Length: 223
Image 1 (cartoon, rainbow, N blue to C red):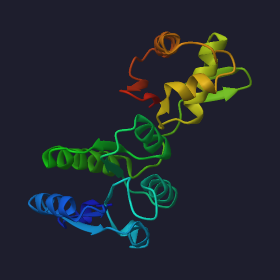
Image 2 (cartoon, rainbow, N blue to C red):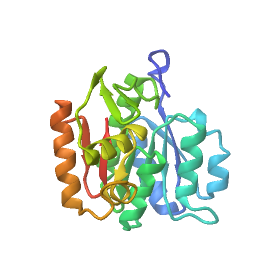
Image 3 (cartoon, one colour):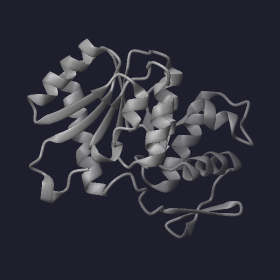
Image 4 (cartoon, rainbow, N blue to C red):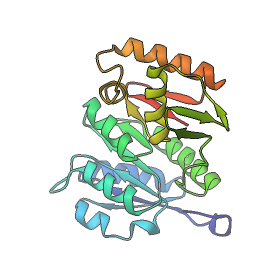
């Protein structure tokens, strides 16, 4: 991760991508914007290439011998760098799983390299401001059957308590609608529309409509 002392050096990107033509295209484009890309077609070589020495990982999912989701899980567990999934796999479950494992962004192929460049810059700005993937101090505390927000007890219905508790325990991680409903103790048979209503009421009680972010096509994340 770059700091002020080394901000003039090129951004170093580790790419794990088994399509050499695509990798070359991305590498040449990003090089025009001061970014050095090192690509590994073999995921085993990629994860042993000193991941912590790079500023960002650009990761394909369909790889030889090791699924990209496994690579994502290992990198997020061991290293503190942003991860962008770059994949032609169109299964929504792949997107959901990637974000749940801790990937920071998911960019479906094909895409314009300009969009990739913009997303890389956005992620690096956020990481440099926060000092990495560290979770911010939580404004929430769960004590028994009560949730405290900034020290104040919240008055929640059982369903609201259930959903907000899940989001608090996985704060900063996107939870799919299905996961929130299926892991609920009080609304397992409820529709996704009911979930949206509950989320809306929780936002209102938090006094901040942006506290719970809707991730399009996936679910919700507590910021």
